[in-house]
Structure formats: C-alpha cells, structure tokens
Length: 342
Image (tube, rainbow, N blue to C red; front, side):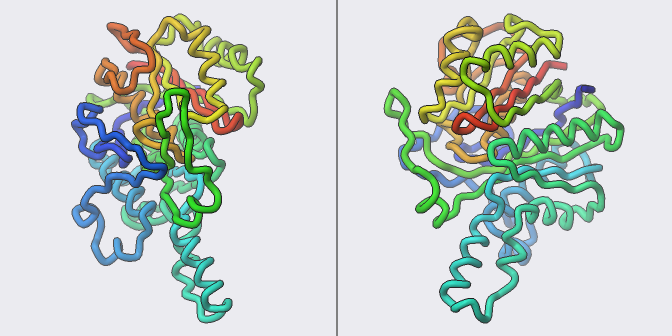
C-alpha cells in the first residue's frame, strides 16, 4: 500500500486539545463516569443560525473539519470520509422520545433527518460546498480505522490527492443510562470514563513542510484469539518489512475492562523494552477514541517526545520513527495502525 501523508491534525476531546499548541502540558483529571468534551467557541467557526440546528456531534465534526483544512491550507478536499460508532445519538433519542410522548403523531421530521449517521459528513460537505466522494463508516470501534483505510486506498489508487478523515461520537443521555456500563475500573482503581470527541486529519499524496507523519499501513480483524495476537501482529509488521524491535513506541487503547488482557500480553512480551503509551484515561472511552490515539501518535512523531502523562512504563527513546497504534473493543474489532516518520 502506498504511504499517505498526514498534513493536519485537529482534536476536540475531554482535554484542551483544540488549542493547537497543546500536547499534555496541562492535564485535566476526570473522576466521574461520564465526561463531556471541552468545546471550542462554535460561533467563531460555524454560522450561529446553522449551529442552532446542529447536535453536539455535528458541531464538533464540522468545527474540527474546518480547522483541519485550514491547517493544511486546503479549501476543498477530494474526499470526505467519517467514522462514527453511534452517529447523532442526541437527535435519535429526541426523535424516539417524541414518538412516545406524542403517541406517534405530529412528529417533527427534522430530528429524524438529523439523526442519521452520515449527518456529520453531509454537513461538512454542505459547509464546504464539496461535491466529491463522501462516505461514512459505522462499525463500532472499527469505524475510524475503516475511514482511514478507505482514504489510503483512494490515495493509493490515485482517485484522490487529498482526503479529509475523521471520527466523531457524542454522548447521549438515554444511551448512557441504559446501554453503557458506566464504571470501568483498572487495577489501580482509576476510572476510565465514557466520553465523546471529534478527531479530524487531512491525508494527502504529497508531503508538505508541515507534514506530521506518514500513514504506512492498517490492518483490521473482527476477532483475534488472545493466544494468536502476537502472531497476527508480527505478521502485520513483517508485511511492512519491520520487526518488533523496529517499533519505537506502541500506543495502546487500555480502558480498564477485562479485555485489557490483550494489551497486557504485548506489554509483557514483545513490547516490554520499548515506550508504552496509553490515552483513554485522558480522552475517555468512545467508539472512535482510536482517533484520539491517532492524534497522539502523529504528534509524537512530529514533536519527537512523549509526555509523562501518557507513559505506562518509564522507557523513552531519542527518536520515534515507527509508532504502532493498537486498539480493540471487548475482544473484537482489533486494529493495527502503523505510522512512520517522513
């Protein structure tokens, strides 16, 4: 697969990541079971009249997309590709509650129209007047990696030179109360809250002065047995002409549940002697949280240092050229994402 370049990165999360100079110098500790994102002033980014009709996820997605294009100095991308686990869950809940409250009569169709999963991608395209390729992936924790993979394929096949890629999820009141098991505790008793966020990136076939890193390859598995994990990972690296010893840092999606055993196996074996990084204790858990891990990985390669707040072990290196991002969700939807310096 042809490498593609990451020319901009923008994150709206439970930390002050929307501020471009932030890289975990000021940490916000979260102790509650749910955490909202720290939202920018949307009036500076979106028409206030339009913003009033947007759910939280749409506002986050459109704002992060606009800032990502601005950083990359691109007006209109060739493709817009988004990933989301739950879509616009706020409007979905409002519409379903209206059905119950109004006895299925006199329903406002706006909530239904805005509740679809591809609303974020559509609103970005409308804001930009972009008539190019537009796709949304809704596959749980694989949603964002699949969006990345699609963008890389488009660039590899020369069907696009630039692709705006993002992952968006918002909190929903009913969703939180009735579906998500709220409290997740790791062995140290640290709460990993359920959260929300939007992470957008401009991928390009061309390297620029401001390029962060190169997206080398992605591999996605629906399920991997624990005893086969190391073999699958080593095969992935072999396909990219790398050994485990070539990886300079590994970014892991630890969230405190029982399935962290997948991460522990790698931490205690093939990645025992390299820097190990976690991020969900700061961003919270949500279906497209791996986008936050991708934001961290890109920053790590560009800035060439690891903030202490991210390190699991105490190991650091003088250079970070090959960074591996690994995420899974409850034993399913495993993704390996390899980023390299360029």
